[in-house]
Image 1 (cartoon, rainbow, N blue to C red):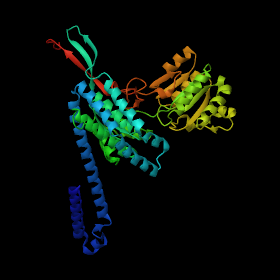
Image 2 (cartoon, rainbow, N blue to C red):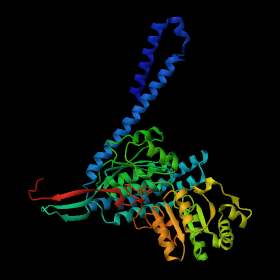
Image 3 (cartoon, rainbow, N blue to C red):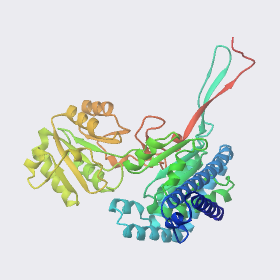
Image 4 (tube, one colour):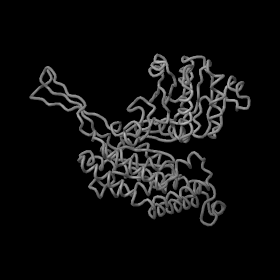
Length: 472
């Protein structure tokens, strides 16, 4: 920074001399106040300063990218034993440093209160001893998984005698840009280490202290276990220019995964020069069919909405078959309200529950991330699927029914990463699916879809055994 200031002062001096020479002493004095030029020179000075600052950030990010690329080259050849030992040490060290992590987290929570951060994000931000233990356990689960690297997916022999195989390989360098949830720092780092990838972490400003504390502990533990330096890196600045610079690092980063709200995801997808995997927002529905078991429906709906409303797999919209509306809508509205949920409804729902909040067009495509829900009456399964297709985000959908044919129709016609029959939407999770931790839930179809565990952070390559074959 000292060198930059010297350059800026020289630029200021040279431009001052130029103005003095071209417009004369008396006119020049009018532009000068306490050695800073008020008009053109000051604007020029600020522009140069801003340019130098951006160049400095881009150079910092290139250095981080180069370090990650070098680490990835070593990491891809690290043994399973070394990676698993590192993951277990990372878990142990997280628990050993619980107090320091909580101390850093309290700084973030204080800043969140000062900045009036919305409650759903504050809920995601909070860390305590129990949460840190669960994060550590997640790392141990990942360590216990089979190593995907160099797994032979398939092998076949060609008529010319060549044996061709397809094996799993690391992606290389993974960049993740995320908001609010400091547990993502550990989950993402653990999955990348297991799958042989270096990782660059860029968390939100609201969790900067928590993220740095966790990332430093994880990196030190991994290196002490024999993994390469810089296999885990965290961007330590909150300036958004670092994100802009990160999105340009196609020479160093193999894939960027945005994890957060729609604004963040769209910024990354629309501006990144690096390939992205979109972990989209969750606009989630449950369709209660005409033959649904009401007790089962109650349990599934309340769990899907209330167990953790601030996450992407929480329920937003309830579709009720018109043949059961008179009996079931008053019942479920009562139950939802008893659990603190604000309920909104269409015209038919309002007729059954007059004091309900009228739903608007916005509600049908809303991801609430809070204790809110909208209810809509539908004629049949076709209309339910049509509404899901029109408004939802292809994340998670569920049907409650006893009808086998309707269940199959819902499963195969609904276009979403996870589709359920008679189960809660909150189950869409890497841990629940047996994948261990997850780096995100992808709503796109390339390169992965649904909860992304270890296998989803790999690519493939062909290996060919020959005996002198040539192209004829």
